[in-house]
Amino acid sequence: MTYATKADIETLWGADFLGDLLPEDVDGDAAVETALQFAASEIDAHLSARYELPLAMPPAILVAPASNIAVYVLANRHSSLTTTIEERYEQSVELLKRIAEGKAGLGAAEPAISVDGASSDSGAAFFADPRDWRRRWP
Image (cartoon, rainbow, N blue to C red; front, side, top):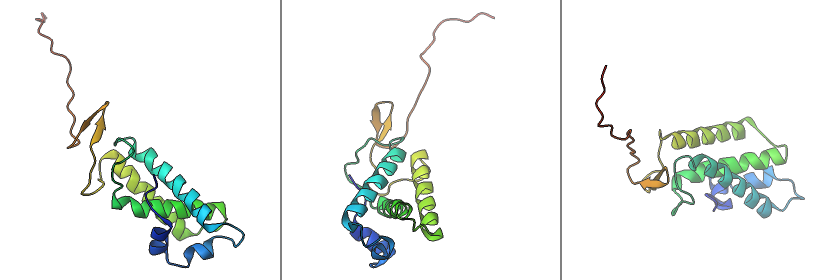
């Protein structure tokens, strides 16, 4: 599952951006789709630390990171990397790291969090040692 579309990239980066980024001899639609798949894989790698995948409903908060990562992949692939593309990529990865660490969330549609094979709606998890009723003598 991808978290963004070609139209999302065009909305965030400008309508002519992909045409300027990609060489003329490249099938733009196929290249963008491949880049979006790479972006989804990178996002899933971060989210899998905290959430059960695939997400039932892709949160809107992931559209910008997916678009920025896909653009970074395309720019690296075609030697068109700029400082702006690299900065947006780094910001996107930083957001994904914060989400994976629980310092940021996925918004209103926050899914259940994976806790050792079980799930929790609130994200809270409680762990304790087994009870020990034996007497201890000094």
